[in-house]
Amino acid sequence: MPIKNADDTYRVFRNLLLEEFNYNQILDFVEFMSSTNIIHGRIIEGKNDWFLLECNSIFNEEGIGYQFINGQITSITDPLEINKIEESLNVFKPSKVHLINALRLLSDKKEPDYKNSIKEAISAVESICTHISTKNTLGDALKEICKSGKVDIHGSLKEGFLKIYGYTSDAGGIRHSLEFNDSNNVDYEDAKFMLIACSAFINYLKVKIDKAGIKL
Image (tube, rainbow, N blue to C red; front, side):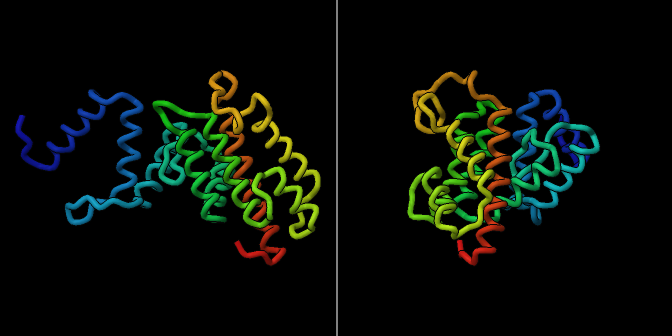
């Protein structure tokens, strides 16, 4: 059937989406649309903030278990968790790169990579800690920061995060074992927790670093 007007175009396009695309392909298309703007009939690459807000509103209204975070459709829907992640993206540029990678790997609808998502989340914290210390690993950097008194990090929080770091760094762990292939040992809940925990810790560090008068 020839396409004669905008209404015909809409119907053809809608039928194509609903009849030919599977669920993940539709989400991929929505993601693509969020990264483009149509101005005077031309497609301009760039984040479409209006589209992102509208999609998140519709997701909420329709009870769809997804939300956009930094242009990625993710099943993280709790407003407080989303706020922690989005806030942490504005703290330190090297950390932001790792956090975006962690979010992308977690949210990949075809082949999510939970192990490497956790690596990236931890690396986000490591990048900010090594930046304000003379050490090049998170564990040593946190210990030096606390011992020097440069930044006032509560001892219990430091110990708690070192234990989380230890989980990713032990003999059978995630960061030091590239041949670690048992995907059953790392799942979505693990990677989601690590992304949110690392985001919250980065936000906490930012406040403490600002109080100490240290420039990032």
